[in-house]
Length: 155
Image (cartoon, rainbow, N blue to C red; front, side, top):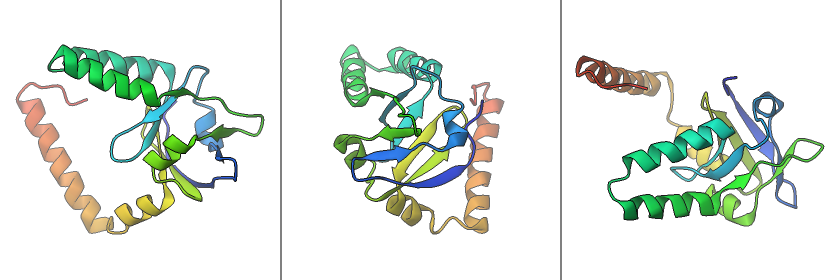
């Protein structure tokens, strides 16, 4: 299942947030939430979590770099446990990392889900109009074409 779309949800007083039903259906037991890049949390199904770990083990420049990254990644990781109402408890560290206050924004990224504070999302994407999206698409497409021409994988 591909994770598609975006959704805003309220955090309750205990730090719980309802995971959108569209995303819950694709999250099997063993899914993991952890720190992501650019002040986001990322929810990954078990196979995506395993692939991420494998990729970092294979691409780290040095054993020290590998250990440091894995320590940081695993220290922030929690198994996704949803209550009977489909809510996920976000601990204070996760909420702080992703700048989540009263509401959060869930974004489907195909194989994973990002979670970020609503205010950060709104600020970052206020300027993403049709023209900005076209410009970004043109840059990404050009880089992908150059990578294919050089025989490099693009995915």
